[in-house]
Image (cartoon, rainbow, N blue to C red; front, side, top):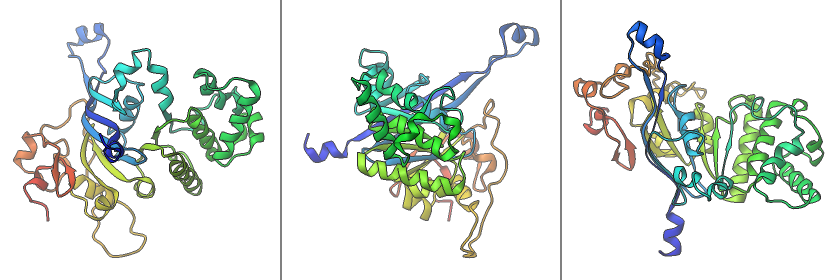
Length: 338
């Protein structure tokens, strides 16, 4: 394989990923009330890839499965079906083998809530040093302190902040500490689960700029989970739109924002406030997300779709390539949408 082919290989590959949760009532309740077992298909047949040094953003309404995908990618949940590979290594198999620690070092996660993801009883020094100690990356205590100070400086904090506790920081500063902790093992792949959604808008921009600078400096690959399309427009190279556990559209960022194909993608973009007052027609997102315990037949979006027909109600659309965009929609494939 040539050097150019190696560079073109995606770092992360996800194939037919699915996760089902058993949400049934206890056995005795089911017997007495004559109820069947109930399952939620939180993620249902998701496939995508992320190139080295690139950012794929997953967007969608709350409950569509974005955070479950994030946890599947770092091995916090075992998949019900499908595979996740990082640099050709199957995550599920590798995490069950002696190579688990080496793989964990190569991928880290930044969680949504900076108030809950840091131990309030630990100093920042110990929070950031924990992965370094766990992976045996640092020898002496002096070397450890120097490395923690270097990580704090890389995210715009002071070396003296290592002696403080999390409660002494603002939300944006806490998220910077979370980023520093994630960077401690020098990972290649970061999964960011709505890392700015709990922050003020002005602070969001600061944290996002730090993440983009770190990506350029270190060649990091991101999976970025968000429901904020303005944030996605700022950070992503590619965008995947999720609805009820399934991907409905995957496209380059510029293409998706300029020419959205799937009706759901169009609804999401139409719901963005038109601050430039361009006079464009806007269609707010209609209806409610269906109950995931009993999803609609066929295309799960058909009860809310203005272009749905009988085929949409009975047949699940496949994700197909369409003019350089991957989209799962009968109306698009049949050219029924203007």
